[in-house]
Each structure stands twice: as C-alpha cells, then as structure tokens.
Image (cartoon, rainbow over all chains, first blue to last red; front, side, top):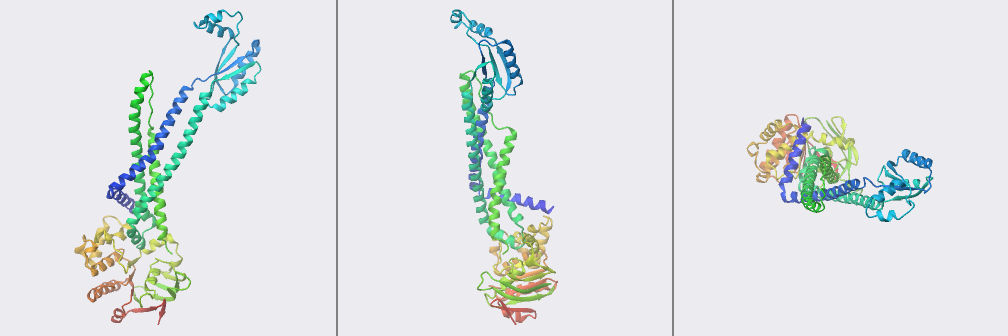
Length: 301
Length: 217
C-alpha cells in the first residue's frame, strides 16, 4: 500500500511540476511533438507511397517470347516449368495466331497486319511474378532466358526498380531521422530534468540524508519525463492529423481533376499507441539518465 | 549499542580528518562530542549516521557493522537515525508541516498516519501553532526545534545532533538542550556534537573531546 502511495505522490508531484512552469512545459511539449511528429509524418508518407506502389505494380508482367518454330511438346515443357516455379503467380499462353488476331482486331494496326503474308509473331507466355521485388524478378528473368525454346524475355520493371530504390532510400532516411530526433528528444528531456533537479537539489539532498532511496528520489522525475513524452506523443499525433486533414483536402481536389481518388491515410490505432509508447519511453529514458547522473554525486563515499 | 573502533577518515592521504577514533555508547545514553572547530566532530557524526564511509575502522550499531553495509541498504538504516544538522537543512519553500512530514513520506507512511505523527512531533517541540508557517518566518530557536521535530518524527532509536545550539542565544540554547534531554530520558540514544564546552560542564554526561581528529583524554 505504501508503495502505491509513494507512486501516487510521485505522479502528483510530477504533474504539479509541469503546471508550475507552464511556458517552459508548453515549449518542451512543442519540441517533443515536432521531434516525434516529423518522423511520423515521413513514415506515413513512405507507407502510403509504398502501399500505392504495391497496387500499381499488381500486374507487372514478364513476356517470354518463344522460338519461331517451337514444337507443341516444347511449349508443354515450358508450361510445366512455369507451373512449378515459385516465382510465378500466374501465366497465360498466347499463341501466335491469337496474337495476330489481337493485332487484327485493333483498328490502327489492321491495314499493316493485312499487308503481311506470314504471321511474324511468336508464341508467348505472359507471366505474372509472385513478387514485385526487383531481385526476384531479375532472378526469374535470368532463369527464364535459359529455358530451351525461350527466345527472348522482356521485363518492364525499370520504373519498379526506381520506385523500390526510392522507397528503400526513404526508409533508410526515416530510420536515420528517427534516430537523430529520438536522440535529441532524450537530450531535451535530460536537460529539462537536469534543470528540475537543480531547482530541487536541496530537497533531494535532504531526502537522501534522511533515508530516501534512489528510486524514491528518481520516481517523480521519471513520471515527469514520461508525462512530457506522452503529451509530446499526443501532440505529434495531433500535428499529423492536422497536416493530413489539410493535405488530403487539396489532394482530393487534385485527384478529382484526374477522375481518381487519392487519400493519404493516417496512422492506425496500433501505430498511435506505438507513438505514445515511444514518447513515454524516450521521456522516461531522458529522465533516468539525468536523475542517475545527479544521484551518482550524492552517493555514499 | 554503538561501538566505533579505530575510525580513520581522510579525503586526501596527507591530512586525515579523524585518526584512530574509538568509543562506545550504550543504549539510551547521552554522549557529547566536543572540541574546537575543525576537530572532526561533524565528520564523526556523519560516519555514525552512515552518511559517509570511514577509510579504516568499524562502526557497529545494534550488532551490525554499518561500514560494510551495501549502499542500497543504507537509506533504510538512516531511517533509524534522527539527524539534526548544523545548517538545519530545512526546505524553505515548504511549510512547517511539510518539512516535518518529509521523513514519513520517504518511509511510506499512510496519509491518515502522517498528520497525526506530525502534530505529535510538533507538539513535543512546542511548534503546534506554527504548523502552516513557512520556516523563514520562524526564529532561530524555532527553526532548530523544527529540525528536531523532523529528526524525531520517525521515532528513532538514535538522535545525532550536530551543533544544534550554534548561533542561538543562551535561552534558546537551554531550551534545545532540554528537549534533547527529554528524548534521552525516554530511552533515545543522543549523540551531540558541540564546540561549546560550557554546555557539557553543566551536565553530567559522557563526553569525548576531539582535537585534530583524535580523541584527547
């Protein structure tokens, strides 16, 4: 019970400390919100682009053009290989006759096709890969070109590669940005708590002399740091929500012009909880470092 | 109850503050540590109160050598001592009640128990009516009594008082000594450091005299 009272007192004390210096507290919370909010916004944008790219690349296709005089047997063999390949999600065989018929059906090419006596088109397999990962597609391209009877393999994945490189670079930048801002957050909390400790230095010293344990002294500071982190996390979510609401409004107008729907979706409830947890953890960490550093000076010599 | 053997304390190798100090205090006894300024009285009290560790020697309290205790156990040991500091160490931004209640908060007393104990302690030192006053508004003697109230709030077995009458006039000095004697009468072991030998002369209690860190017989 006394343990619980001690925690309740620590919570009360830390809340009082926040309201004791409101301007300082608000400034800190703004810095917290920006430090957590910026990487969060970046993460949301990267995730949305990534999600959008997945839907765009839902039907990237690889065309396997077969030798001109290929036998029916060889076509069956190639079909077997494609059927067994884990890199293939689905495939369609387009015979040279079908391909010609498709061309003939097109008004713009009708005259040109009619003027050709022989069918110049090869038989082909149109393959949908099981993954849009450039590495897997490249590997399949290599393997497919070695299959007997396959004359040429065409992959239209250059744009996909570029997009993947862009997303990978963005994610890496996001990680670095997050590390930088998280470090700065810990430093900010450290400094805030250090100032708090200096203000309460006498109380800490007296408490220590009359039997306070390090955890008793540290507890209000840890709560103080954690509260600031929590409010900062909430602030970061609010900033993101405000930004996305505004951004989506204009994006919607733009997308309407192209008869399309584009919306940047915000963090999920799980991600929101994660943001709050990150805020609390970083605030708590900064407070721990600052209070431990100070308590070290007061240790029994 | 307290047995100090060959205590040496030094902050540098050349000039020890205490040299081979040995003495013992029985339970419920009153001991005066006297000597001129810089003799090592405060350091000796800090060593007994487990606020510092000696370089050499042992301090056995209740059968336990406190110099060998793990630092994590020391806060709990300190709660058994009532400490009266020379510089009072009062929280000037807290009222009398909060100052006295601090050790109870640290020890984890319940909210219902704290006011009762605080008022009882304030009553004992005659500060009941000053409960809501800020320490800055109190006289020197009252501040010293506030310090005593805080020291006795945990009902300690040992009271360590470092120059509790320094900077007080004769009337206040007598008042403080009487309060300490009262606690001693009810079985509290009192160890008091003072440079004022007149106080010791007026009382027939055990006394050790320190000079340059050593006991002079």
